[in-house]
Image 1 (cartoon, one colour):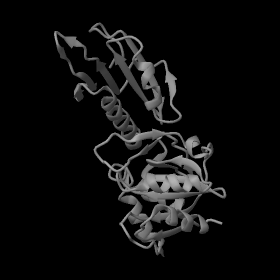
Image 2 (cartoon, rainbow, N blue to C red):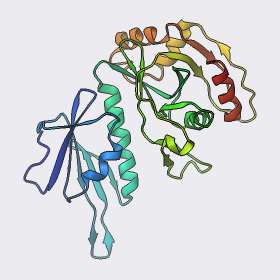
Image 3 (spheres, rainbow, N blue to C red):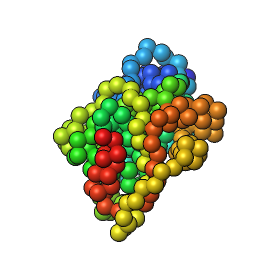
Length: 272
């Protein structure tokens, strides 16, 4: 599948991310440069023309008094049709990152927030809207190093790599678009190397709850993490093997939390 062809595409680009070549093209010049902040951390430019995954954008313009929709395609399937350009970019980022999480070579992606403290990783598994970013925010304010608010990227040896996309911070109205923030806005550094896991906290928010974390056995911990492991169905053996190595020597706790600040303080105290 060619990145640029003769059907009105004026610019194209190919990147390599986690072993996969992904193409982008647009019907207007200067558009793809705006995509760079959306690309997965660690992406590289590639000179491949043929790709398995191709995102194509036809920008909306005015037709008379009407504003036409922006159209975003993934291969031959329409992914987005919307007048909201920023929302379209949000959908592109989410789909692009999920594709990498599903297809990455020699990596297992787990839906989780991740910070580092005293040289080890603290994982906060959970789906979108589970409150993990709120907890990551508080951990960063308390001196933790930022690794991710969306995916824990775990190597075959069990170490966690940074996936430092901008934090997606949701406020009171869940229908509002989340704020996108850099870790530096909290005075926190961003991790640059793979580290072992020190603590996994299986926790979710409940208003008024008191955080009383209890220890979880390694077997139950692996089962819990598999629920959040992106390639678990496609690569179950590799997922289980990687998680088993990653949890060797790690502490796993479980408990419902209330206010994020107090939970963050208690979790970091376990990593001293």
